Length: 396
Image (cartoon, one colour):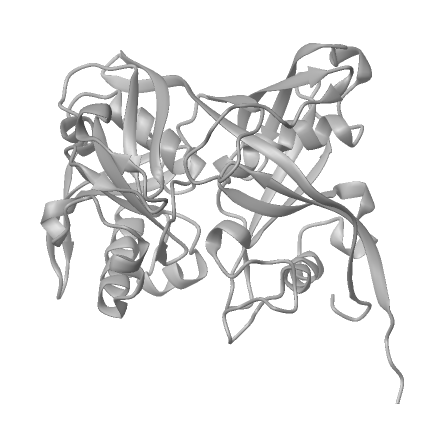
């Protein structure tokens, strides 16, 4: 019997925000995977260890959660006003597909540092000491992200005292600016609010009728009020992820919301579009104990938000969903804004299962249409391992 040897592919395993992913330079991928298609998807699934009916990804680099089943491909930008092109692939854990429909805001924090370290940013843009401004083209959604990466002695600074709830150890702060974050989704006409309304009634047969805010900013997101679905907004992961009926209900609501947003044409398409849209629920502040045991005091937050990612409650908050939260909070009359107390605001601090996060956004009403120039938040990133990943030579 002939055995196919494994091949080695240069890769770096990086924590970005509250996620982890395997990063590649486009030029380092096998030729068949340097272009979009079945070969690329098959390769990335094998790297991560999917599809895995056991749901553990034991035979790959994935960590069996949506936050750790991620891949990134970077290349020197073809755009003269950008440094790097960034493509994100969310790998399904138990199904055979890679979702390319959105960005990962958490891993966005690692794109600038990796681009600098791997030679994708021109050396004359990197200071000996200070902050390197990395202009990122987010290829999934066609948007610009500006990363402010600290540099010490000509190298990316990864250690520091910046603390991020959901991440155990402090690191160096990387500030991100998501420019004009309203997503231009096919079927939504590029509108921030695809239905034209700040609040809609969403009828979900067999489940109920819900007030929702559906927004395309950072990532397409459907917001509901926590009390409308029987929650307080202070829930931790186990309260929802251990309840199959609750998970099924959220997925059904998400599918109907995706239809209303024009992201899919038929409900069954939602199963192949797990990464977008997100679904989240909001509530006014309450005291609760975060998953780390740290108390979150209601006076220290503007609102509570819990978000679903790839069918499960996220352990903290997706970075792109944080952009959606900050954007919606800045626009008077959305469910997010009302949960935060209403009125005009340029930033909010919200409570999530792991603690709190602050995000800012600049919103303006122009000719009757809301526009957001940018959303801002801080994350951190750290290289965990670098070298090569190995996959069987016939895996793609």
